Image 1: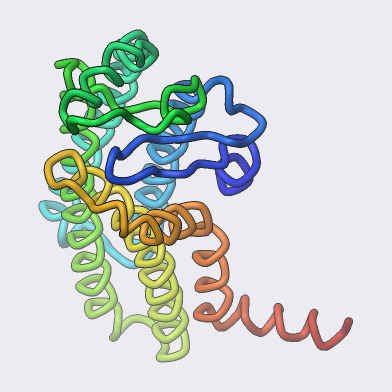
Image 2 (image 1 turned 180 degrees about the vertical axis):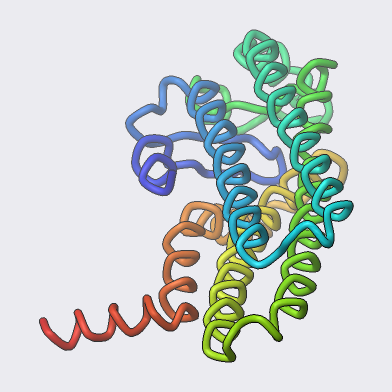
Length: 254
């Protein structure tokens, strides 16, 4: 997704208008670029949930069956929300593509003409006049707290599972499992911070007008979102002892 956002889309968020401007290879299809990234973010969230589920199942048993059933319920509800978001995004495609009328309403809202480059087909707005689009935005924004609940419950279940396994596993095995879990927590924290923070500020910009002087913040937030995968991988390499050992040996060899 980083390559896509850096090369294919090359996104710039222009404040105070909160317009999404594309200068990459796919600059003529900004709505399609936005839709692909939205689908990619959904896939990223689902893959992280599967990693947590795998690690949780590795260290837990049926003694916390009720908690695991609750976590499974939250997971499937999150899947339902993600599926609904994708269906709404498809249904909203026409509303998002009809940019000229909405740009005129944005111009009336600000009370002065928009910059000329905003009127080109490379720039798009999230059409907040469309009910379908706003339902999509609301579901997308509310999915983040639900994902946080899932991760918190999974962490709690994994820690309880490790506590129960202390008497049946060696200290070395327990230490390895803890290291795997801690590296997963760090990797997830990078994803959460570098994706949720930019998205959260973007959603807030629909309600609170961000001044033009804060354009530098837009570049920082876009960079955070585009580089989250590389930084997450780096966090995994640095925190996971077996991977870090292999990585340092490989670098030393070369």
